[in-house]
Amino acid sequence: MPVRIATGAVAHIGSTEGFAIGRRSRDNFPRNIGMHFLPHKAMNLFPAVSPIIREPVAMTSETSELPNPTVETSQDNQGILVSSPLPSSSSGQNLMTDYIRNTKPLPHQKAKELDEQLIKLIAKEYHPFRIVEGAEFKKFIYLLNPRYSPPTRKTLANVLLSQLYAKVQNEVEQLVAATLAICLTTDAWTSITNESFIAITAHYIDTNTNLRSNLLSCIQYDGRHTSENLCEFLKEEMEKWKISNKHF
Image (cartoon, rainbow, N blue to C red; front, side, top):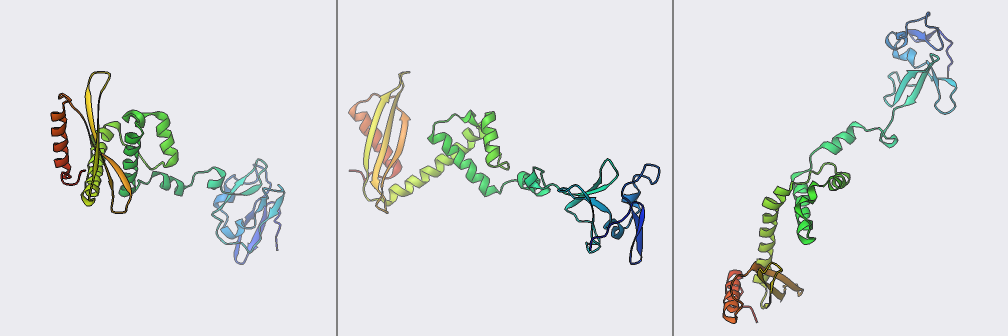
């Protein structure tokens, strides 16, 4: 049953006793007597103010001997002990678990996957490397995953791009090696700065009967675009990709 304790009364629970302080004047007791000199059993009987009805209520003697870790006890301006729940993450208060979750580094494999997807985004969508230096891009990445730190543009250009190129080249080599026949198409053009380029694309059906097209080469070509020069260039590329006996 709830028990109401008068101001300044002595609370008895078994062999334990202590002051149950409610309203009091400054001259009656030191301000900290209730926090430092009262046993936990007596403090469980202190009047508290309900956060909903805002009226003095008494805690029951059936409560735990130790203070509730989810409840914060304080005094209002009238000297009444007030119990209120501690804030949680749902109320906007950051918890220790949130801090650890947001600052703990990503696993190496996960960070590697994100780096690879980032360089794919830049290469296939024609974004500049400096996109990773933009303030809004950094904010966007942080909102997605605060534990991920994007690589610098120098790392993208000098390390990740070459790694992705080697990986994709190896995958294409395995695909063209497993197919029986390949059809090649080529295209050549001159840029507005008078630089000549030539590209070779392989078309084939893979082992899963899927039609595929892979760009094998796109290089700057400085020679004359004669039939002899182009034929020699194509032979060199087919030998490099080991498909000389597969084209038709």
